[in-house]
Image (cartoon, rainbow, N blue to C red; front, side):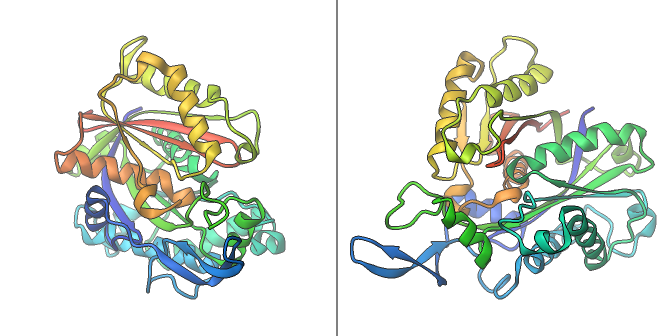
Length: 364
């Protein structure tokens, strides 16, 4: 099923709305800051120095993980409503026909104290309840949580494709958010030697972001006379055999299979894809190795004119928000006419092994 994208919202370290954020990303703007609350060792000079990351300065300061998620979610949904294509909070008939999907990080007890205290299902239930309350939207349809990290956006789109034809709702609001900048998440990353620091030059720079996407049945969008901003043409998800892929390089076979499956649904067998590829490369060896071997396996399926777009260069690693950020980047490139073609491919890989790919089109 093709999905119409009829609304976007975003907050990031380079902008507090989707228009500003995507324009800044296109221009290569970046705003790293020293995280003075998290010092790391500079072994060359034998002293402690602040880690560098990409916080949304003045927006999420002082919030614990769940508080940050709520703050980020509210920010991107407010942006979606301000853009004007989506009815506001005073349109209950619209929101009662809208489902909610939360895309978040894997709720690993080693990273989140709340997961240890409440259990994974308890945390999911409590957060969804709080999210609905804080967004102040009169949802009456189903609410669903997808906690697969980077690959969560692809899984959410697949869920929407499968549910909309048989659900009582006409659309889903997908809200994705994550932050690696709280103390426990930074300690978790440091324990696995994943942070970029003076003695680990190939690690990730921690970031945070949120993005929301309204996806609809195309017939429902036509009924309310809304012109879609773009379309989700195909989605594919999968799982690496090794669920701890961040500990060693990936051979790229599973990711290549997922991308091939998504492209086959749009292009058919054999035809080369031309356009932008938005991916979640972040400076870590395992992710770069996985993408490199995937690219080799796909061979001529990805034509030479393809352009690689890496939001992480400006934002750092935004975790579970990265797929939604990539979608916003691709859709805005269609709207502003700087995309290299009328199609874009978004590719995501989670450190826990979940993978996903989806194809976006400027036209259905």
